[in-house]
Amino acid sequence: MVDEEHADLSIRRQCELLQISRSGWYYKPKGESELNLELMRVIDKEYLEHPFRGVPSMTSFLINDCGYPINKKRIERLYKVMGLRSLLPGPHTSKPSPENKIYPYLLRNLEITHSNQVWETDISYVPIAKGFMYLMAVIDVHSRYIVGWSLSNTMSAEWCRNTIQECINNHGAPEIVNTDQGSQFTSDLFTGYLLGQGVTISMDGKGRATDNIYIERFWRTVKYEDIYLNEYRDGLKLQIGLIEYMNFYNNERRHSSIDEKRPCDLYQSKPHSTTSEAKVSASLESVKGG
Image 1 (cartoon, one colour):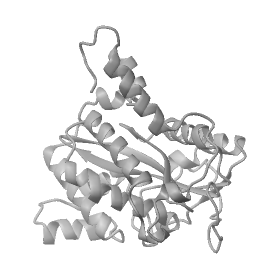
Image 2 (cartoon, rainbow, N blue to C red):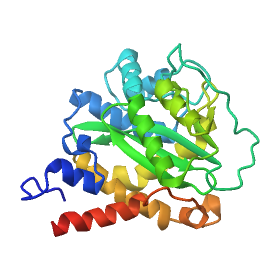
Image 3 (spheres, rainbow, N blue to C red):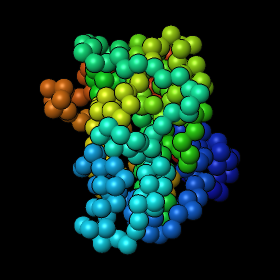
């Protein structure tokens, strides 16, 4: 799809037209050993099935059920790299910086009745051949519509801010955004932007990943229905595959949790600019025609 020898368009311009991050195109595998990459894939699948597993429980599973000759310190480090934490109360790896403000959780007993009332967002590890990337997605709770997403090599606050900014540019500002207490989401860069847009911030209670349940469920769906099935070779293939899957998820896939409707049937917004799907379609034609 991206032509390295295109006569008129640079790789940078082609990536911009296709809305493909150059971090995906120029992706270099992370410096993890083959064993660590294998362990991370096993951990990710087991965590989706049993998110109560913290480091001690996962270490026991890997040693006793899978036969890996590893220790707790290795798994503790991999949990940090992957951004995982157990659903059970107790110490977790997704921690705010001590100087960052924590906001109260506002969704308990809240009746969610319309689009753009509440968005949830989170970051998830995504395996690719000989490495991994991070996926951030933002879901509208009322409709289950994915209002935006992006990939990155690192979990930076700037990346998170830029992703939520694009969502708001495309769909308008929601009333509430709910996140976990990770340092990216508690940073002044991220929270300051939301407050400047008039958004109310809500954060999961400490050690309560279930407070962000809708985005957590989405990770399970996208991984089982797309990522694990396709075993993407590199960041660019992953980006292109996810563009197709997100379009399917939003506009074709019917969800039992919303009475077999499609997210697009329930989601209503007033876009500030052309939607991502339309941009991608027009950009593809532009690159092909160039």
